[in-house]
Image (cartoon, rainbow, N blue to C red; front, top):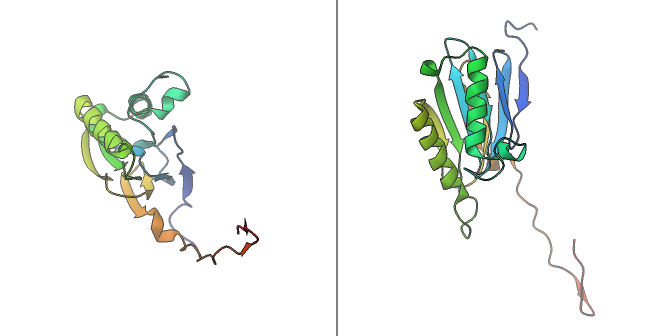
Amino acid sequence: MSSSHPPETRIHVGQGEHHVTADPSVMLTTVLGSCVAACLCDPLAGVGGMNHFLLPDGAGAGTDAGRRYGAYAMELLINEVLKAGARRDRLEAKLFGGGRMFDSLRDVGMANADFAERFLRDEGIRVVGGSLRGAGGRRLHYWPVSGRAMQRGVNDTVAPMPVMPPPIVESGMVELF
């Protein structure tokens, strides 16, 4: 059975990474919790990319450690997309992630989401879609040449944990499974 579409190439963008392409067969993927992924596309130039950052800001910009931080990750992505032929005035952004993962800790996801929106607004890049904040994680698929994105909650593909029997207690010992 032949198809008129070329085979799709999946590229995973991990924490602190980014990827830019003009290849229409490429789909970028990532899994986000409190992290944020910014997806940029110039639909006329047919080029786009994605980054994945852990924290809005911190020490280490300009080093490998700096890639984990929003300001550095955003600058890298924007510059790489422009080098690949995009024009700043045509860039369209979609933002994903920033989920609240733990009730007892500082809401890192909210800080990441706030940072990403503020950064793009200050850079004059319009946000045309996405999904920020909320509870839990999400799996993201992004086609950078067209700007198409698809998101799913990570729990939709995870099988429920089996119910474990209570530990067997013998002479004060606990057997763990």
